Length: 433
Ligand SMILES: [Zn+2]
Image 1: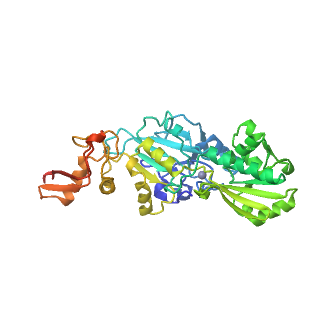
Image 2: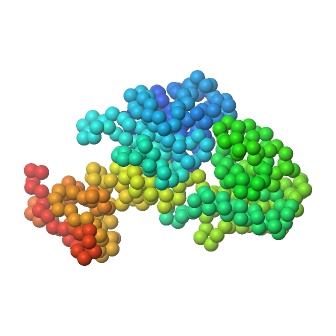
Image 3: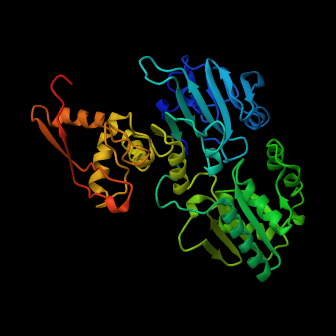
């Protein structure tokens, strides 16, 4: 659930907000919408007139034809095409989340006094990271200064499988249950948009039709889905083994029993496709009489491992968590889970991280030899430069001549030459520094 905190809605050094309609401001002229989920459109109403809304063509279609916004305030943009908006270069990239969801890559002019030529800011909105995204031409070899990251599942306990495996689990259960009880109705939960791959993927694998009600069909027609996917859909409830239903109240044992009574079915099996349902022991199943509800770890957000891969690939200098980050402490705790993969060479505020990491590191580390001021080659400790150490020494070693900084290490790339974590001794900076 996207955090409703104003400062993480602004794109630094621009007049842009991302998913920030609740915080409409005269300072903002350009509102960016990553996708059409309600926690990202919070504050957006049919009377919106505060500026221009930029989004993908699919999201624009939904805003106009589902939310009934005035088309004159919406600017649909193509994907994978650098565009100039208010002096900022912006590229929209598929976010692998729900239909129309995009990552937003902003290249802004350098802030006053910055040593960089430009600031590169990536906002993920909601995303399911895939390694192919790191190979996208707009991201490959790009230095990311700031990453606004979907941290929905930013905890090591969230290790759910890829979508293909989760869909295979659904198909397996459907086969087993229909073999035991041929007149079983299968219900797959969804949101207004989202989870399409779960029910369409299962239907494709089994050669079954999917029933949707008139409102759902109208929305699905706005998404630009492939024709062969749309051909799986039907309004005829009796003709479809799979029915799509909203998650929540409609997926309770009582509601499912009611569905069973209303049709020709002897059993009803429902699926809740969400990463929150992941458990190491396998799919969860709640069975009551002739109805069952399975929790399937089908997620449209990144697992923790995928988030780590994202950060490892992009090596951002800063991360701004956008979920579960309502306080500075919560935000910092989330960032700490990725700090070893970031490029912190310019971030003096994270000196504490390096020292803490060094203290808790194993007794030996295969880090590259670094002989000089802050040189390295991309290892975890490569960013540990003397600039940061000097900063620390100013505070703890001024006037002492020599300071002992526990934890830092010089090592070698070869196992034979690995050195133990120990002490790193260097001269304290002179008082002139
Ligand atoms: Zn979303």
